[in-house]
Image (cartoon, rainbow, N blue to C red):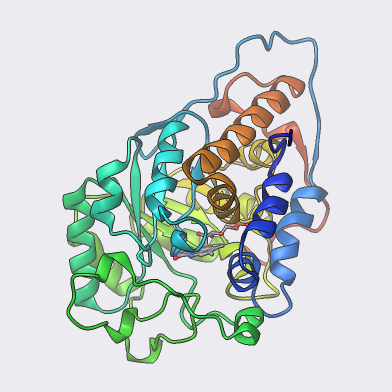
Length: 365
Ligand SMILES: Cc1cc2nc3c(=O)[nH]c(=O)nc-3n(C[C@H](O)[C@H](O)[C@H](O)COP(=O)(O)O)c2cc1C
């Protein structure tokens, strides 16, 4: 009998076998030379742990909160467009898997099931990820998300132009399913005809959302606002001055701008810049429980996973998403014990060695 996957790499290998080539490439690719995607891993590997022993670690608390919502451990599910490419139940399966693990799922604007359908099956907290594609669309999406019970709006800020993923260009990849949040519209809206990842949306036609319009966005809803994709002290500083409630430090898994820094490298300067005024989270490259612990030690409150959710879906639907999350939980619990840590909300900063040369050329005040 075949062994169950024992780590996320096993899920990745099995998903690759299960998925059609072009869908696999769409999920796995990074932008251009994929340097940022690789760096997300090498930077985690460059951080070493400084374990502490002879402490009582028999009880370890993994649960925490994000913007007041309880989650059973500090690993969440990233927003990612279109889960039907990995499993026919798409985001419904992902929401069920996240629910089985009692953790939070962020739902993409570009999901295949609508936000109302996903909210209908979710048993754990949901945040709605917003792509701004025009003021009226944004207003409609934010109001629907609030109505459907989503607990925060996550505005993705790092996609001003279509993604230069060359594998998709070579494969002439096109998203094969309609977008769930726009199914009720009689004609396919040109602004929404692709996802951020597809080459067929027309950003030039979209009225911009800048720091100036954030106030307008905040005025649309009483929900807290998280910015996804901020990765410099300068932008983090403006964000916290603007009253943003959370920052998800992310480089989109290296799928947008190539030749940028990894997310984990940027955590220290972003945490320093917000002075505790906003919660800081991380995604991009998290594959092991030790990655989670490293991010927490550097000041992140929680992390999130992107590609691994597709691997779980492709291997075993909702059970697979749950399986991926539970492996990370097990590994986090184990590495906490090894490192003398008993509470994810009070991880010691001295737990990691930070390599020389990390950090910005210049940090905003
Ligand atoms: C197939 C795919 C689709 C994605 N779609 C979106 C999206 O619609 N909105 C968004 O903000 N991020 C999107 N992302 C980025 C993820 O939210 C996340 O930043 C990234 O996957 C994290 O890196 P990791 O894959 O290394 O865990 C997508 C990622 C993947 C792999």
